[in-house]
Image 1 (spheres, rainbow, N blue to C red):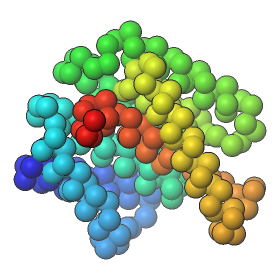
Image 2: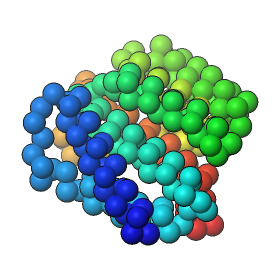
Image 3: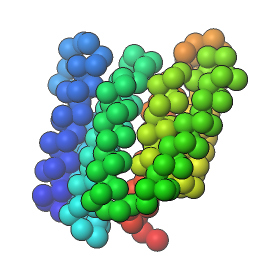
Image 4: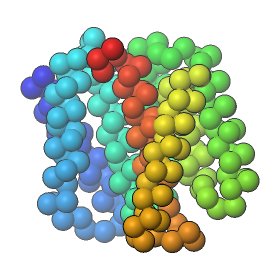
Length: 201
C-alpha cells in the first residue's frame, strides 16, 4: 500500500507537470494539491487491492494519463495527440503484459468507439472535437469491446449532467465551448478500474 501511494504521488506530479506544459502556463504548486492527493490515495488503494504488481502499475499509469488529459482539456478545450497516442501505446503494453483485453477485443473496441464518435462528431455540429474522437478510440483499445460501450455511455451521461449543471447555474451558455474529454476520461476510468478488479464486487 505504501509503495502504491508513493507511486501514485510521483505519477500524479508528473501528470500535473505535463498538463502545465501543454497548457503553456505556469501553474501554482498549490493547485496540484487535489490531483496529487487523489493520485496518492488511489495509489495506496490500487496497491492494496490489485491482484498483482502489474495490475497496480497499469492502473496507476492509465490514471495518470487520463488525469493529464482531463486537466489539459479543461483548460485548453483540446486533447493533444501525444497524450492520446500515449494511452493507445499503453493499451498495447497492457495487451502484452496482462493479456487484457484480447487483441481482437481491443481492435474491435478501437474501431467501434472511434467510428461511433466520428459519427457523433459529424452529426454534432461542433458539440464534439476530433480530440474526443481520438480519445474514444484509444479508450476502445484500452477497454476492449463491448466494455468500451459502458465506458463511453458513462462518460456521455456524466458530461451531460455537468453541462446541465453549468447551464442551470448560469456559469455557461448554450453556445459556450464544453470540455467532454474529462468526462469521457472519467467514464472510461471507472469501467477500466472495475475490469482490473480494483473495486469490491
